[in-house]
Length: 467
Image (cartoon, rainbow, N blue to C red):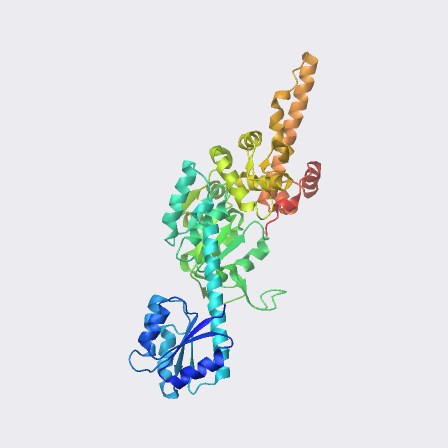
């Protein structure tokens, strides 16, 4: 369908000129005055409006103002004579996308039309994308009827409208970033960037440059000036994930930025002013970190203006069926799966499991099951072995004598030891974002010893790498 362009000019000769030249590419409508043009615009079927500035009756400026009031996104081009350029500039301030001087050069006009339509299309795409993001990270994406989850949904709505700094606390995989995005996309900053930086995934010597940016020549390899995440998030939201892993020397600089809304790039001497909303998240107990001396108390209190605590999945098992339905719907089309539900046996296994990786682990488990499932119902056999081990609790062998009892107890102790060891390594890798050296250092282990345990339990570090 051709774009529909409305030409408004009180000279019939000009109307005819536009019809002849533009009709091959566009659906051209013409009008001799502002009042008639406004009625045509009200049909809602116009893609672009081109109007003369000076006309008898309603002027082009008044027409522009009326159109802006009714259809603020409709692009408008102003035509004006050389002597009224000031009026055209004023029209730009009122919202016109561009202006062109008379006498009209049709080649120039066609280029201006293409440019205006392209900009309008980009605006439409951006608006649609924002609506999709708001749907993806809005209230509907936080699933759960548990009172704690319902309270979080209520608090998100309350804090989103403010500029208050938010501290989100919860175990790995509970959905801290989803909550942060929900706050951003429900706020008046939703049209501005949401920028994420994971303080655990970037080495300390690089984290400062990533946050604050650097000037050209600040260090070896700094071949040009680079904006940091703080500048990229200007007027938007900066999400500091795993804030508890931030080195103390950087904590001072973040505190200054929070208090003054300005900072200096690495190697710079001039202050850079920003308008950021800060949301931080951690799976650590920051109060304990303050007591241990690894986290500054002044930064903790500055971040803890508005605290949200997300409960682990094991404390809200009643939400598991809702989450299962949500994830099946979310991933069904992406993975071309037929699965629309789970069997009673599979549901029991899923609700009985402790979910150390929380909602993220549940989602990944269901994606795997959807891929393996050959029908419209996920069965117990489609679930990982570690989840299905619970099915065999009734198969525990009863010892026949004292010697057998001693042997079975020994075997049970060994299995329990290995399970604890395996979960210990998994959690260390989560906290270290898949980096073996960093993960080993966090738990006070030698790198080689840590790697041997990874191989022993067949754990893939790739599962913990963060983009």
